[in-house]
Image (cartoon, rainbow, N blue to C red; front, side, top):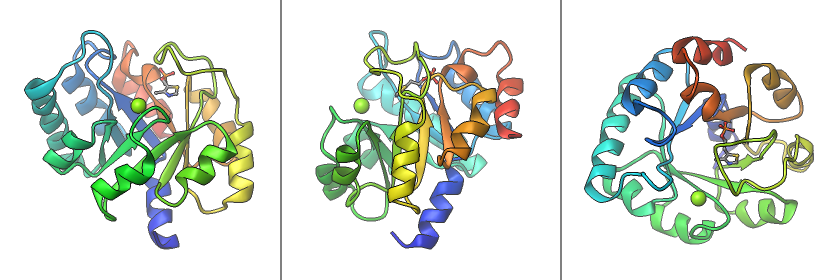
Length: 213
Ligand code: TZP
Ligand code: MG
């Protein structure tokens, strides 16, 4: 990836909304509202015991992808390489327990975005040859991912930024609007958010609060 493309991607990560049907009471309306109010990237992360599978999951992905296209916002799929390829998503995000980044990159080809969740410098170096950006967290306590692990603050973000000045970084985990300036100051290009937008009583207002920062 050229440094110019990295800059474009870094900008696009500024307000990264991550959501699935188990995070929002009406996912399509929530995503449409968030897109209208300033989200810069969207990830369809369909998890949990009542999550959609198979054709239903694909249909939902296509609906959300259409909304993202209309809003000119990149549409990323969590974990599911087959689905990302089937619907020609803009990219995929994987964690450390998913298909290794090298294999995902081989499946995706060079043009789609690949994001990888990392928790240590070793995981960053392993992801680096294949990833376009890294997700680092949980920065704060989160209820949206049961196995998110220990709360880390921004220490790893700071470390990664020192070592890799151009690598696009997004912070995740328990992030509320008032946390954002410090996370960006510490080296992240953006924040990834589930509940502060998906569970907000007013999704439009919550998104705008993040978007104006
Ligand atoms: N990865 C690390 S924390 C987290 C994920 C997917 C959940 C973030 O959700 P929230 O509601 O913004 O804390
Ligand atoms: Mg995963």
